[in-house]
Image (cartoon, rainbow, N blue to C red; front, side, top):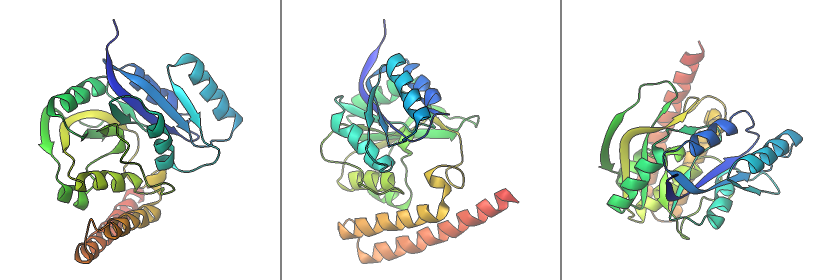
Length: 259
């Protein structure tokens, strides 16, 4: 008998015909299946993508939403959040995958600890994995210095309070997780590898591939946090300096990687 957990999975899709089946198979091979899977087509607008999504619609237990124009992953996820019906939301990008125990382990920990939002360790596929179930608390200041939440690793309680910034295409996830933590919601990190990516965190394909736009997206996140009075002017200035130094460091690493 199949086991289910009270989780809605939200997957934004944009011209991801080469990777979406891999992502979906990792969802439907879970030891505990989600209540629902929601795919949001962010206006891929091609016959090939339409045909593939029709195939998925007929062969997988999914709900597919189609946007009328391309809005970015954050806005696409928001459309999924509006219709999700489960107690928890888990996010997965169309080019990432999960380990087959991800939902069962993370759901059980969320239920046991009554945590609002959780994340876990992820690696590039093929790298060394972590195999403990140690749990660490994530504080707002820890999150401010470094984003602790890879979107593919996030599970959060379903609520009507938090959405991604519509139209924001870079660091929109970092903004949302930081807002959630500074509202003093409980947050934990599970030190176990439960998800996989297939490219470097920055400097390759996808949104993170454009290092400059990613940098300015993070600066925009700080500006929003300052406007919302989550951080003051002094902290804002320090974060700008810190992020600028990190940006140049990443640029040097990319340069050396290509040599």
